[in-house]
Image 1 (cartoon, protein in one colour):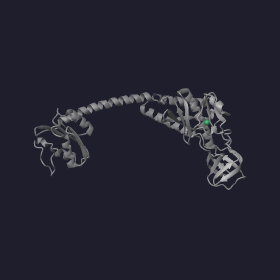
Image 2: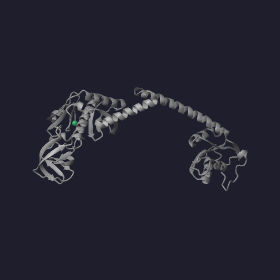
Image 3: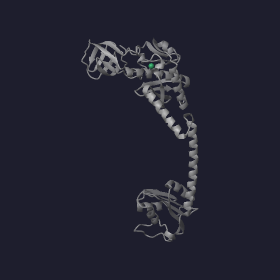
Length: 414
Ligand SMILES: [Zn+2]
């Protein structure tokens, strides 16, 4: 037999006769436990005082799985107790999914039903729709749903012939997820949220939308082509979420010196200011870097003009970009060593001296890695200090003219 839960969802305690027991699995002559189906989880509770851990549709009966094999046996009378808190949560959450779908009917195009599921913290509804569910649409779905909750619409259910239900084009129908509903083959159960939504559904529902309480939309995603998944919370997790979002909004508004409704504008202003400052900063840094490069000491070597030195406060990419722009103008070879615990080296050349060769010499001496081509190369992770690398590169202290001096046995760059 089927569960009586969908028809009489308020019933929490019932007497039944045990039909059969197999290990921990129990079949009763009738049951008000809801068997998992269509996205609604199985009820919890107890039978004959033994906790129920699962309830499933068997081939010909509802099978209750207990936490352990029971002491009772076939023919015994037992009391079934359905866990009130979990069932009530499922009824409210499940009915909320119908109300949300009804909201979808009002804002989403080419709507079809794509599935539904309840877990302890949240509920998901999958919409088949061509509408891009953006933030505005999401908020509108939430607003309409909570409005329909407040409007206290009656929720009713009845069995109707399958053909009659299929002829109605206003029924949300999904034979895939609602197979439990179609089990009888000749009848289907229609759940009607008065004036708002009609769906073929075998779950448990509250008799009025006001029993749903607060609905908080959590997130949206796209689980597949043409599908939009909307996740929401009801009950304590919805209340928690509401408080969290409210607190975050107030915190942000306080930081920005505005109120919650002014957040978007204040944030946009802040971003604009930040971008302008970033742009100014890049420009000024560029000017500073240019000035530093122009100040680097010059040395003539084999008829080429080298500029070798270090700069503070700039990364290898910033320096590299600038060196490539200024080489030729400032010298034939520009070699900059970054300061810091692990200096880098960046070399730009007009091409007569191989930039890659210079960097290879430096990394051969100081370790690290890097490389490049004839006109540009860089290396990093050097083990020497900035001063040591500079000395190796032959920076002429006080205008020393001959850079090819061997230093502590090190090989000079070629
Ligand atoms: Zn339902």
